[in-house]
Image (cartoon, rainbow, N blue to C red):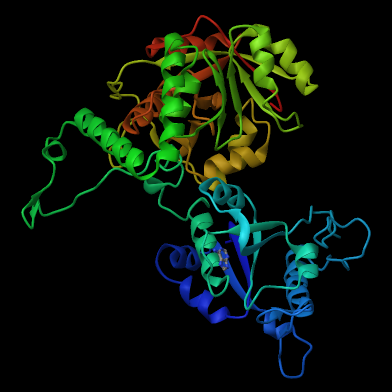
Length: 504
Ligand code: ADE
């Protein structure tokens, strides 16, 4: 099995790193082949007869510096391995500043992301962990002594990262922190139940307090509400506790949270139209880009998609100006009058109009006769289960709006696409999109007219409800069949449409 992500840690203390990274969840992921972690001993690359890697700093000063040559050679050896022997000399033309050619010999894009861990770096965050997790290969350079010769850093480093405002004796612990936090965002490292996707930290709230058995310990009782079995009350109590804890311990996070709650209330005045935006907030994925009354721009931290709603074109323009135009920018607009100015702003003609449909009740839909449990038998009734990566090509071949195979592959790898199986054969599939809607609903031609679509949609709605989400989907204008299916299951469509503009 090919690893989902490989870490290459350049260090003077490889044993320290390898010992630290081969236990528990990370160790299991390495064992399963989901992660690859190697520690590269910089000392192996010194040209000094005595294996020396440090020297005095020019201009004087305390301590020793790691020299450029062994660091560069160690890094280069790793880069060459990653790129298949294509790293050029640093002075070579066409390099990207970090000494690696923009395109390697075999035509692959060859930018080796190289992180130098240093207290002078940018503070490490969950968002950064997520960003690094999208790389296939990550090189992390650990410093020692008083640091590393600046010239080699300028040549090879793409990111300077600090894990906090304190000084460690070396970069190894910082590298391990980064490997740990990044790894848990790599698909397959955590079990799907405890996915790193939707964590309260990302939602600007700290975790609520938790309790386990016994009910009474040292005279302290578990709060009654947790024993009540009332899921709604438990949810409310946990939210209140999380809010209180965040207010007390992290006022900076709480301020962000409060602003988003205000937006949520304003957006809720047109609930069906804004369900995509309010769900982003509810699921802890929303980043506030701009808000002025009912003029709001949010960014989904996961997909990077922007969601905009405005009272008029002039207010809309103020929101666009917060977004740097680029080929990858994707906007979801909630008023038609924003479309033309947005397309002009982004320099694109790509636009897709959709209806938004919401399942507004809390009760799950009945499943009898639609789908069944794996262990049971019922003629012609499908079993629905998570699709595994070997179905990627089939999904890609049948999903009408499948643009990018990498996207389909990622959704399947993340356990977000489900297949209906009749007699062991795939009859259809549905899933959740990165930004949070139910979608991809497809029934294979030979299985049409057998309620497979209804079964899949019901399954997805019930699954969303179990996760505490409000189920919603988007249907492209003109797709009457899908509209009727959704409405027959009790979903309500917003009167106004939403408009996707940009890199659709
Ligand atoms: N090396 C030494 N201290 C560090 C820190 N705080 N963050 C990252 N790397 C370091």
